Length: 110
Image (cartoon, rainbow, N blue to C red):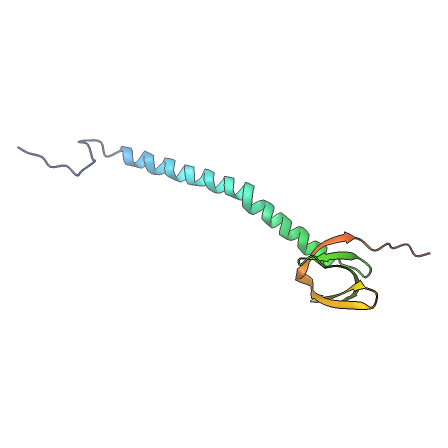
């Protein structure tokens, strides 16, 4: 009597596939954890720092825009920052384009 088996399935060896699925799931979990701690978490931390920096802008701060323009903050609204880039030369920049605070305003009032 001839018995036909599905290709790749040895006689009586159907239980090994379950272990392969479990190791695949564990490996995918490990890869996700690596991506989370090396890529996702640091990016979220950096975005939070940038958000705090933009929220804490003050008059007199020296800032740099994402385009490389440096200036002193002379005006603030909810969405726009006015920068003085030279004597009597002012430009308006969206808050989201402030890349760095180079120098905080000195609060020496006496």
